[in-house]
Image (tube, rainbow, N blue to C red; front, side):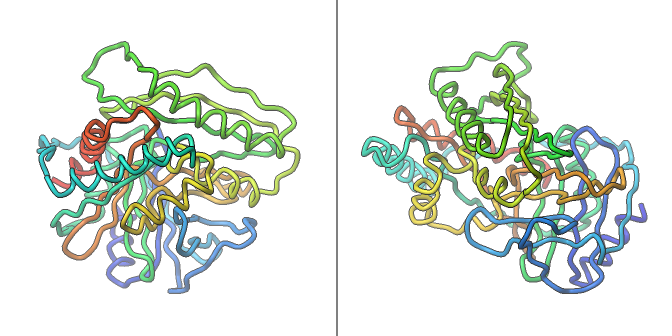
Length: 352
């Protein structure tokens, strides 16, 4: 594909780009920046592909007006995925994360916050041979996810397949989702959710609706339902709001980070994670997507942003995976570590 030839040339030339495919689409879009500049988002009136960190770092974008734009239909290729060996017995990782979860639960008992979402980083030795094939494999494996490759020489190379929308805005209509709770699905039709998962998801729904109230004249929510993301299931509530005006910046900054990736109250939970996790999240649990444009439909009236979950940072000889889980007062540290191991399979199966 011509798009992937351009991708390889752009990456070898260390020029910024974003290549992505929206959920349930067959069209891959590439924005190949013509300069090396790091263009930061300030007003949210910018047009292009935005990439924002969880807490600390540059909120930048690939400008629409300064990029070569390529759109191509992806090949209908299928890939044999090897069974991934999941390491539930990594003593160092297990003890460190269980200790972190214990500190989270103790902080909840001390009433610092009601919920928090700790995470960990797992590094794997790996060398990418062909970015185009890797991206096609990602899209083929996760057709309902937002799949992306984002690169800037000052930031690095990130790849992901996220199931979670931060927000979509078209005109004065905003749509988003409250996504939480995780369960491995082995093909059964019905998923039973425990009280812990239901409460966790309700936290997220309440936060989003309360956050949107000052910006909205009307808000509606769906009933919670089970949403599949590859081989795991989540509880999801769809939320639609009618906006009073189209000033995106305060809305995005109020919603991000959501309780699904941070906790609540948001500011206290975020500060706790930055201090206690023991590593820098960078762009994991940040957000990404089209800002004031829909490249596939060639309009500049839409914004579609996604939470940067199920992602990894690709370095020269390794990849860094990022996985987290929601913790409440009833959380069990061992169970939460097992949940992160299960989630790690999403990206691992793409690599091997």
